[in-house]
Amino acid sequence: MEERWADGKQRCGWANPANPRYVAYHDCEWGVPTHDDAELFELLILECFQAGLSWECILNKREGFRAAFDGFELDAVCAYGPREVERLLADARIVRNRRKVSAAIANAQAFRAIQEEYGSFASYLWGWTDGQPIAETGPATSPLSDAISADLKRRGMSFVGSTVVYAYLQSAGLIQAHEEGCYLHGRHL
Figure 1 (cartoon, rainbow, N blue to C red):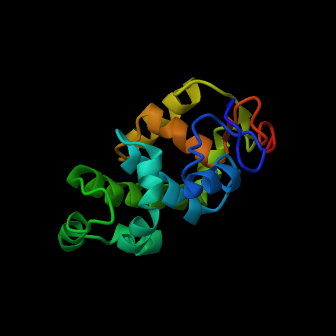
Figure 2: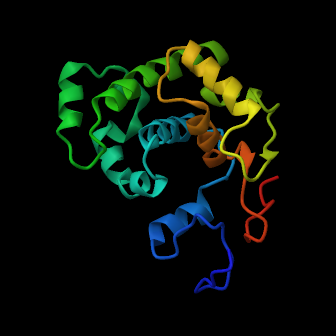
């Protein structure tokens, strides 16, 4: 975080000052608590595609993902079949990985089942933290991400290992992880 930023604000070490999209994501989205199921669904699918890749790669392709996945409209993705899988695998705007594309569809269906059980996916997710963000900087997994990962897998999701879930919890604001010295550290607690 020693890097001097053009605007004088210090940010988390992972934010790339050469990528305005990444800086905007850090400043305006990452760690901002969301209870919006549409946002939570998009973040979940993107985090699953990120597995094994950099978040910056996925973020740079986000608009392509949005277009390819019908704006992440849950009912549309739940209804995808073999034709849509092949269409997605031919779309250069996204990460073309058959297992991840298939997982996105299955995860959408599991997401919808969780909504039906809990009234919203947000109720399910925030129930793990009693509705409050947790301050935690440093780890890539935690007992919380381990437990949520195991539960999501039990419900039929894939590409939701503990590391992916931990990153998801950070991005959705359940875990507040802006580094000490970052101008956003502690902002959403």
